[in-house]
Length: 242
Ligand code: CTP
Ligand code: MG
Image (cartoon, rainbow, N blue to C red; front, top):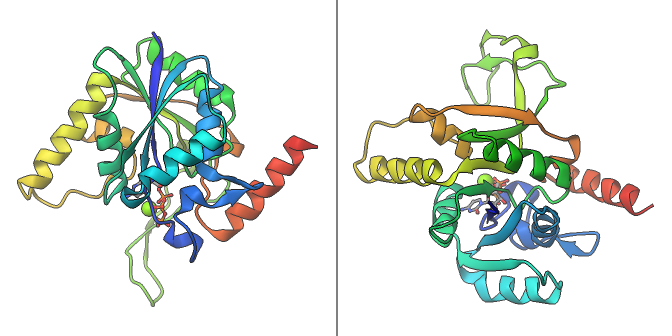
């Protein structure tokens, strides 16, 4: 069973600073989105890639992917939404019924090694409902009482060895992922009690009682978020090309 991948790419990239939408910013002269789609297309586990592009940039993204010669794989582009969650939901809606496994991969993680893509897909194929790649943390993490502009009281310090920094692609049984996205949408529409924001797809599975497992991630699957991340990404790319 070949998987489909949804690539949310509709964000503005505000933390990266002024410029084009983040997915279209360049790394080694090639847009982040093209790197990310290539990384997925390299996996034999992936047969279809659906990109959720900035709503006003669909035609531009189609042209961009064409011009970078990603032939041989089925690549589709849909308009993304106002939030990452909405972009993923819109991407999921473009996947044919018969596809049983879905990966969700941030356009902002251009350098994910194909081994990570393969491992996530394999774990779903082996029966997991939801799979996330993750790495141990280098920093100690503290929970605080957020108090912008003033020293923040520390509440506690989770034991670092039990924490993981979670990456993408995250992999899912397609029906399970579609269901939790629909539930989240219905709750929002009903104006339900303000649940804490969920920042990844596996988090939605957890919210509704599903099971999520972790497989090893990779340090090169980091997310390009701030300007320094782009410096690191350029260095990683240069090392690969050396
Ligand atoms: N994303 C999306 N649709 C949105 C917001 C985010 O498809 N409305 C995508 C981004 O394009 C990115 C991924 O979700 O590939 C992870 O989000 P993040 O790193 O936060 O990217 P941005 O939202 O673009 O960045 P920022 O939060 O700094 O504005
Ligand atoms: Mg964001």
